[in-house]
Image 1 (cartoon, rainbow, N blue to C red):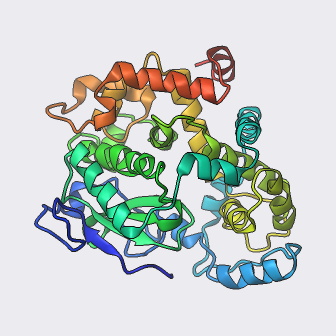
Image 2 (image 1 turned 30 degrees about the vertical axis):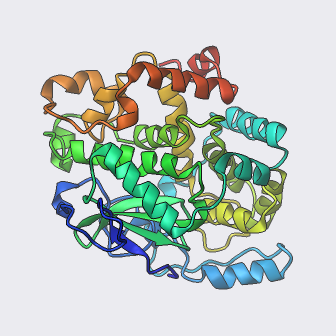
Amino acid sequence: MRRSESSCTVNTSSSGGGGSGRIRTATSFPHLPKSNSREVCSSSKSPCLLVALRPTNVDEERDKFFQSNYTYNPQFQYQDPIPTGVLAKYSHASEQFIIQAIRILHAVLEKYGTYENFEVATGGNRLSKCQIWTNIRKYMLKEGCTGEIVVQLTEDLLSQAVMMVENSRPTLTINLSGARQYWLEGMLRHEIGTHYLRGVNNARQPWHTSDGRRQYGLKPANPTEEGLASLHSVLFRKNPFLWRAALLYYTVCRAAQLPFSMLFRDLQQFVSDPKVRWEYCVRAKRGQTDTAQPGCFSKDQVYMDGILRLLRHRQTIDFQMLVALGKVSYEDVDRLKKFAMLENPRIPHFLRDQERYQQQLDYIIEVNQLNDEELSFLLPK
């Protein structure tokens, strides 16, 4: 995979190399995915699911697709056979929140005209590597985790960033194309302030192993985990539109009904840039060999699903406790408090003022044209 060579352990010094900051072992973070791969991973199982689902011939098929004037349906190949059970699990798209997703997309276009205008207006300028390092160091100081995480910069990643364990070290990989002036801190809140800190807190809990999760009857960490991280991505933005979660949700819905080339054309109503549309289509069609057939990989719907469930119950969720308990569902918080290790949990800096945090969640609802009556109807419990 093509990647920049830029990586370091972020510390308080001004240099880009590894410093004197303390590095924890991988075993301290059992819920950060482990991989020697340079690609996105979502679980610690081997082989990594999203690595296995990335086509090995994606570059060649992209060239064929663009040369055909977007009419060719890619024929993807994979390094290893993908278990049919995995594909079956994520083969069905939900339309439960499709109306809300489309409404959010249209609200953005109504305000900004195009996604590209939205990106420039709300994201700001793309940052240089030097600027990225500076911002990361400042953020690490806020969270008190200077020297704990290795950071890598890449030019080839389907997602904007990913946190995992590589070579026994917590490692954050950031896509340079998504590192914009006003978006980078949201990305760091997503990956470090949510995934990383919840993983650190989780390692202290009696349910930090698979056996422990079964013993305490824990619900799956998702959609809470990704929903919470996605909310934190847009927290404190002037216009915190949930664009990416909405477009991922919509793309999966349409991929279930359309071949690749038609899906690509359908997304043009929201995104003009062919390269961006290609990436969304590949995400939604990964796992398929013949993309001329309707079909989807539905995992990307977890972001919108989690966001709306958390917003629905935002007034009764103890969000500090949700982070302190580790990788748990919001539904398990009240039940687990009495069993938890709660001495000096790692709470992200932006969550320490709970009143302000709740105000921000209310503002996210307002900007995205959601309301409590609608959420209660969609999610009665």
